[in-house]
Image 1 (cartoon, rainbow, N blue to C red):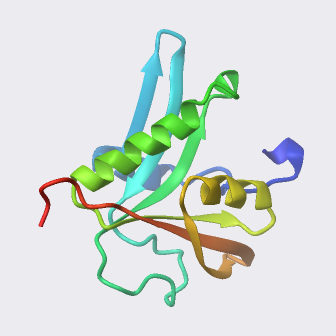
Image 2: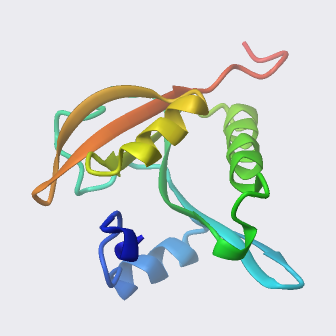
Length: 145
C-alpha cells in the first residue's frame, strides 16, 4: 500500500497493543499450507483513537481493524468470502453492526466496503488524517427474537 501512496495503517503498529489484542482473542487468522492467508482484528469496543462523536450509541458492534489478505491471493475472492464469514459470525453472535474506517485518501477501499453492504456514516479525522467511517448492520439470525 505504501508503494501506491496509501498510508492506511500506522507503521509500525504498537507491539504492546497487538499483543493485547492477540491475547484477548480479537485477532483472527486464516492459514493454509502456504502460510497466513488473511488476518483481521475484531474489537468489541470502539477504538480509542476514534473521534468521540462517532458511534456513541449502545449497539453491540465489532470494529473491523487491519483486515488483510496475502498479496499472493489477490483476485481469488478470498477477501469477500472472509468478509461474508465475518458477517455471518457477527449475526450468529447477535452482534448488531460491523464498523470500520478507511482513509479518505483511499477511495478504492471505501468503495470496496460499500459494494459489500457497508454504508458511510461519517467523515472525521483520525490522528490528523481524513477518514471515512462505514457500518454494516447485521441481519438477525433465524429464530432470534
